[in-house]
Image 1 (tube, one colour):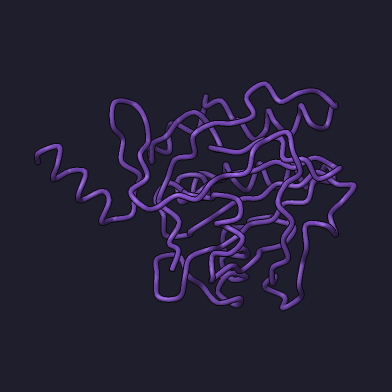
Image 2 (cartoon, one colour):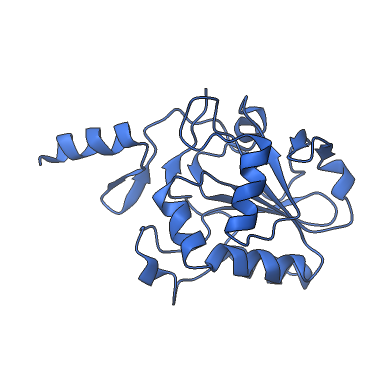
Length: 211
């Protein structure tokens, strides 16, 4: 397969294209918020039907995790238990973990509230809440381009980290072990009141399936 054909196939399948070691997102991107300033305020519906706002989480560290259960990159982290372990570790320390689904109706990864809850149960995931963003409003506000795309917000609402979950942009399960987990490092730094060493990285994975 030629390089051009390979890139066309990956773009059509919704996977990020790897070119010369960097990730190129085939979908349109929105301007991402900068770290070190206030995270964009939002309100979204949780699978419980209740509205949840970022403002309500003031005083707590918050993680935002964009997901698509059909994405092989997401599956890598859930099928190895890596994402669940990180969720439980974080929430066990009082962190609010919000998993966000921005897939539009009729696209890969779109689920109803009931289906999202079933996924949480079957995968033994441990987010604080799962938020549904079918219009993509929250995702575009944060410039979320991939699944998974991760963000860490401190107790006063400042965006401290944005990017990949780790430094292994592959679908290989074996790459989970030994990877540098940027989210864990960011959470540890924020909890200690220290600067995040690597506040921005390039997210990898499937493109978010916006309408």
